[in-house]
Length: 309
Image (cartoon, rainbow, N blue to C red; front, side, top):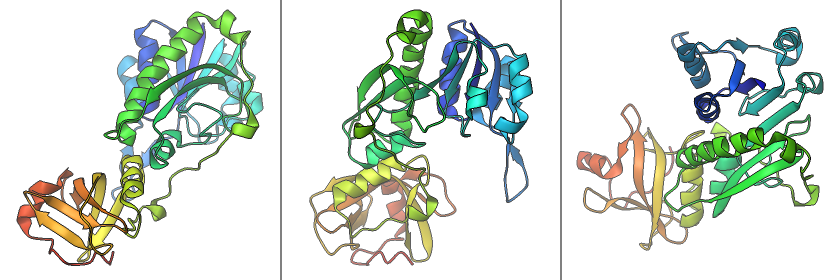
């Protein structure tokens, strides 16, 4: 099969790398345009572009795929398009170009968790399982016919990045099984039940401020789910602290109160039912680190209230 692959981020790159390593014929890759850093105007390549340049795989980047890409994509004479976290809505006249169709690797057990951030939202909502669905890409958002579904557990120690890695690895397995047995699966697809569907949007940075007047378990799930994108943070003494991982503790106090702040107990802050221990965070202007290591600085005062100002 002549395959054109659509993707942009680390998840996409893992899927693409798996296909390349297994010898599939990737004739080209389509990725989002390069990003420009607003601070220094430096151009940043996507993970998949870096991979393609290293492997000498032709890559195309269209600002408006549906307008600019049609002629080039037709000339590639592809049998199949594969999409995985590409990042643009692909219209039907593009989806119809390949001879055998366009198919997607989606990071949830459809029809649940349709949308652009299924892995993050599954963690935020406290789900204990998630998985991969190989599906037909169509104009609706993750509404196409399903061919393979595989489930994996979400552990209490998982964050969005660890689940992304598991899903990407599983996605390679499912996609190669689908391609190797294409005739069987294409004739045994399953329509989605829209009555069981759920949709979750992209995470927004403006929703990242931690509200400690929240149950501890819900807050830890939120922090784990937002570890990669729109990372949670709080503000204390005019400094912002990004939080990547926390766990619940049984200590209690006033919501937002600093209960412990030392290198033995760590940084423990009360919520509206119990408390959480901040384990992995990044103080403003510093590198990401374990919170206990930062407690030697005496920046936090036991009894203070986190006012987020």
